[in-house]
Every structure is written in structure tokens, then in C-alpha cells.
Image: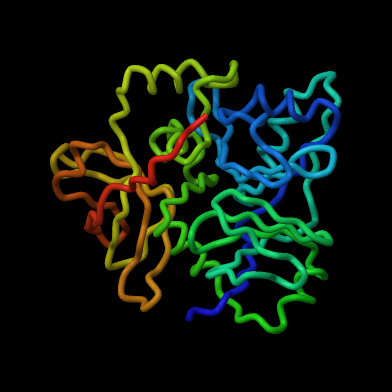
Length: 302
């Protein structure tokens, strides 16, 4: 049996959105239906530009007086600044939390006194420690460094690369600074993961996201790829079938556990993915091997 690993995740950070108007504020800003959240349920969501392009993706759940968002650390400050521009006279506070973000890989039944959640997007909280079940292999956790250090001693420790590999295995779309404004939500399966509601009211980019959904004209999709040398998020992917023109970009990357290759998620133009694809490096063109299309399990969506 594989033991549970505790992984500090410095590439992730926290924003807390609180205040009497926090729910209405977020409901008007993000593509998911915030009203479906409760103290035991989280969801994946994002924030789009007026053109429907994702500025970032995040995991969100209720906390006392508002909501907690876990997002890429390199976009935290810019997202906080942009969100504050829309607060106006609403009773909403947007604060950067000092709590740390951690991953639990291969979760056990409990962490300290906290019984860990077992179903996707279930939330469990106890004594300042919160765990959110992301998928079959992982829980996301937030807590103070002191609180987590007190629980860490008996656990084996993994690395952020272990977590990023599992992001890729599970098809989890983390939009970072390198890929901000590159994708509409459907390109990274945000709709299939429950992060888009087509029944709610307006939010930035809603018209384009809805049109893409109802017209069924999405031409770029999420794929898993591999390479024999290092690759990085944000790199343009080019296609031989398009005479070397760009056909998409890498969303996230990580080295394989044995170091033999690199793994990645990439948003690619569907027809270009049928032939050779590559990225350009200082050493020349680096071939990418297509592993396959990322197809999350079908489930009821808002």
C-alpha cells in the first residue's frame, strides 16, 4: 500500500474574499455557480477577461464570512489587484492569507484529528486545517505553517514535482502567469470539471464562453504530451501540418519520476495534433510525443 505523502506547494497561494457581499461579488465575476458551494463542498473555477480568456484558475470553498481561493502564486498579487477594482462600494474585502498550501498525495483516512474527505470536491475542516478532495489520488490542504509542521513528523514528504506530475496525470488545469489569457475555459476542460455554469447570470467573458458552448465550435482541446528534454509552461507548440505555425501551447509540465522524460499538458488545435508537433528551443526543435486527449469523466454540470 502506498503511504500518504505531505507536499508543501509554494507554487500555490491563497486569497480570501470575505464580507457581506462576497457571494454576490464572486457570483458576478466567475463562470462557476458560487451559490452551489457550502461548508462541505468546493469547486474549481476561474476568472476570465471580457474576451472570455482565463486569467487564472483556482479551487474555491466557503470559509467563515466568505470564500477561500487557492491559485497559482505567480498571479496572486495581480489577481487581487484586479479583483479590488471591481469591489466599488460593495462590502467585500480581498486579502492575501499567510496560511500555507499543502498537498496530500495518496491520502489516508485522517490527518491528525481531521477525517479526510473521500469524494471529489468534498471539504473537511478542523482546528484551522482544511482539506479538499481533488480526485482519486489527492487532497489539497491549507493551514498555518505551525499547525502543519505539528502534523508532518510521521509523514513522508514529497516534492512539488510529484504534485505537478499528478496534475498532469489527472488533467488538472492550473493557469499560471505563463499561460494567463491563453485559453477559454472549454479548452482546458473547466466546463467538464464543473467550473462553468451555463444557467447563471452574467460575468466577464460570459457571452463568448456561452457562444462557444452552444455553437460547439471549440477547436482546441487539452492533451497529454511527453518530451525527451525539459519543457515549460507557456511554450508555443508548433505543427508540421501547419508548416511550423503555432497550434497551441503547454499548460503545465513536470519531469517524470525516473527522469527519463518530461510530461506535460498542452492545449492544441485538433487537426494539428494528428501529425508531428514540437517546441522551439535554443538547441533546435524539440519533438513532442502525443499521449492522448484528456477526457474527464462525465458528470452532471451546473
